[in-house]
Length: 352
Image (cartoon, rainbow, N blue to C red; front, side):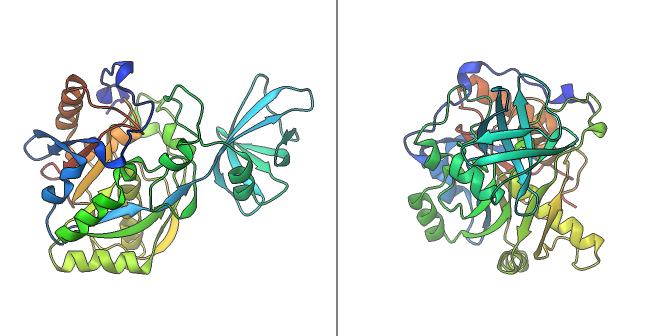
């Protein structure tokens, strides 16, 4: 399977540059993976599209102000983008500078002087003068994705964050969650739709392009995730009652599938169950993967040839997903982080 198998053409004007005035005003494309049927709806239609007892699983990670600017001793500018914290006063970062970075370099920032320790793959390990997470959050900027062609503004502090974000650690938003506001959550609860939360701290690697043509050679950066005992039991209860587990976003799907896979490998849980606990995941989902947990997926539209698009294609079928994307382009849907959403059900044979 090749990277080009997941290409599609997207006019630049369809890339959403700002959020809509209301979170739940977005459009919703409904794709039935088994039949390829496409329907144009609204996010506010979710209560009538879901069944009583269905379980929505959200990612409660909170985006930190992960973009930090600094200066070398020579006066050269450096931009650091937090990938994840390593212990208290070390972090893995992406760095951009006009001249090569070397271990031992000291970078002056508003939060103090950071020292470059070592290179780790395409990331750098840096030592921070204070706990890294707090330093970035206090002195950094909201890390808007590279396809948003403007600087971060005051409204991004609130809108590039879900209304239930509570566990700091992400450097990119779980964007499917951005469509939910209090009114929509109330309507879903009145319908009898349940909800629970897992945590996956989204890393900057989510924007890393796939450079390998042979997808078997591509690897993902590790991301931390946690499934609480309460979430594990709520998912198990949904299973006992025959209700669907609906992942709100690819990050949730990745956390649930990773937890289930690790539970099976440990011999701790039966197939389809999601054990509680925490860990790291490098799970790369491609067509041919068999989903153990996720019964439906709510997700935004993703970049061409991206790992996130590949996961959606694995769930609903590559041809059906690319046809849905072509429809979305023709119909003028808004794409990517501040864009519209899809509700996707699985293709035949993708559930384990």
